[in-house]
Amino acid sequence: MIKTTIETKVFFENAYNDLSISDERKSLLISIADKIYEEFEDRNKVNLNFICTHNSRRSQLAQVWSFFAIEYFKLNNINAFSGGTEVTAFHRNTVKSLQKTDFNFNVEDFSHQNPQYLISFKGTKKTIKGFSKLYDNENNEYPYLAITTCDHADENCPFIPDAIERFHLPYVDPKAADNTEYQNEKYLETSKQIAGEIYFIFDEVDKLLNNEE
Image 1: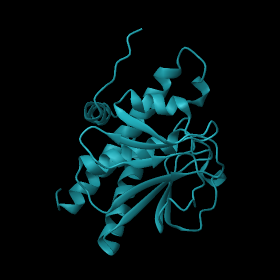
Image 2: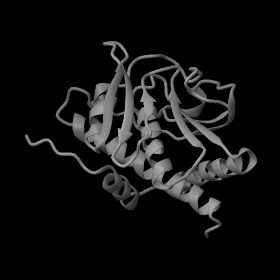
Image 3: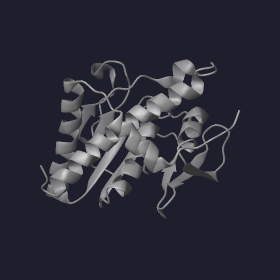
Image 4: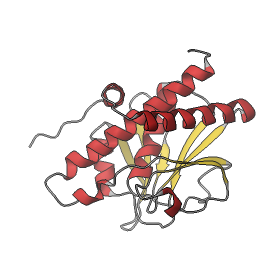
């Protein structure tokens, strides 16, 4: 099997162009964008914290794609973080799916249990640190907007006392496909959905900041 990668920018734009979402979901994404804009106008800085139980798959994907989106739309003073209610690891299948879209992972601190990566992409000198951590880890700046990404009910998500506001943006966990023939496909599918919706959010933020309709 030939291993190929898709250019990050191409994958990101295709994810948005192929996006198919309900009116309810679109309304949620617009609400998140509106709040990011509101916070930016108030404080000239916004921290986003994507939160899922294990900080292993969906929350990591959301952080990494937000990192890319912030650079793509040339936005300043917006930061993306992620965390969980338990510490596990940045799952290797999540890493592989992002590497397939040309993200670069350099091991900063090796641990069999929970390695730490410096993540970057072509065309930027910036990096973010990727590893599984609690949502209130010292690496995560606050105050922040909390965006929970687990696909169980919002009321089952943790109380997050430091959050300025909390949004529930659920995604289906690709974990179910682990160790199956559909593993790579499902992880890329989840990554694509998250990338497309992150594009939608930051495109809205960019329009608001530039007073575009």
